[in-house]
Length: 600
Image 1 (cartoon, rainbow, N blue to C red):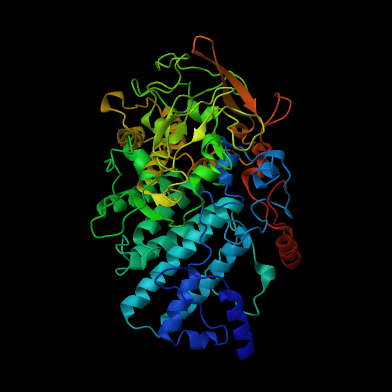
Image 2 (image 1 turned 30 degrees about the horizontal axis):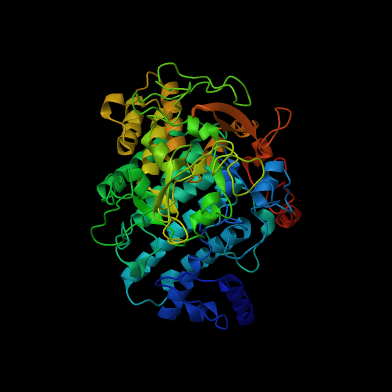
């Protein structure tokens, strides 16, 4: 039996460990009993519970943001290189070869099925052993237990976001476990378990609301638990996941509680520009600067942030005139269309039916917006200028303000197959330092897993779905005020349906590039529906005329005409990732039940 415990321990903890206060790997030659009778080894075991947290952002192979590139926010200019994103666009995926389940560079994100289940089972062993473990104080035991509950909630939420409802595991699996009894729980049941884990942690007196020192960086907090429960309940109530049951009142209750708790414990939106020499808005600065950890932080919005720096953004999502290796994910015309007019507060397009055709080449303009077809980038939502480089905008290059020319033949002109040039007529700006370049390659922003702005919009969506339109609009306008919209153009909803449209529209803009849109459009779809907004992508082909004016033409990207889609990922089977075939085969053999997700 002792030999079996040694094998089990080695299997569980033989992964890389976090670079933080708990960073040590347990000695694989000791038994679990010995580990948890030693305070230091117990701490080291907890460190393994922190393994495999995804880096997100541009840490997908090959320095891509795959969820952002798949959804209708962007088009990845590595489409012709045969890499992961190209496989998704062309539908070259299967349960034996999915781009997010293929092992590539170990430091890159992916292999979620094995990594996240490993973490959940490691955490369950910890939670089983910690009540009787030898620790220095009871306060430490209480805090570590709470941290483990938050971690389990986080990893389980990631699993069900990608794969749908899965077995709920809250106990360590014994060596003689009967796998024939294993079954998939519903998404709602999984979300309820996640909320329970978060609620347990929030009740812990020794778990802090905020990390205040670099020594404790990356550790779990009550605020992270509040954000996780907010997202889990929102996803569960959505059409894709609710199993036909209306549970929006529950989701509203959970989200209202989460938002109120965060506000009551010092979290607030980032509203002040601290470096006015570089940034034009708080929103722009917020996504570049790293959250400070101290008793009185200037950034009170960030709940949890990754500190891993990707390659310099000027290289992986840059410009051909600055030596950029690739343009990366560039904004689609659909994303550009989503930014309202700041002067009127009105959307450019009709939100109920933004396009007159499936290809989105025929926009259905809102006549009350004030949008100027001949001057399309004037007076837009301030977040547009923090998110998108467009024709005529400027970028600091080696200290020199340089005009970006995306017109045909311009210095950063649109190109159909050159990976360093845009396909859409735009380049991405959000997360990029204003001086990002060869002289400042590591100053770009890093991933924010959770932030207060997202929780505001989670609460807004749940409120709108419950018919609480005034409350929903209050949250939406709070976000828009930070963006730079005056109160005089606050959005108002005359019906529940309009409130839902406005909230979804706001999420698209405020949360773009943050991996929300990929999941949002899927969870808003019915299980038997295609994700039609992803089917075609468009760009803006700009021609410079002899009199220095410009002509604008909407074009399809990734396809020549409407006979074939831009992205095969619009098909309904892409609502979920496939469970790896080897795992499905074992599960179906042991349980006699079907496990694979639809279409795979």
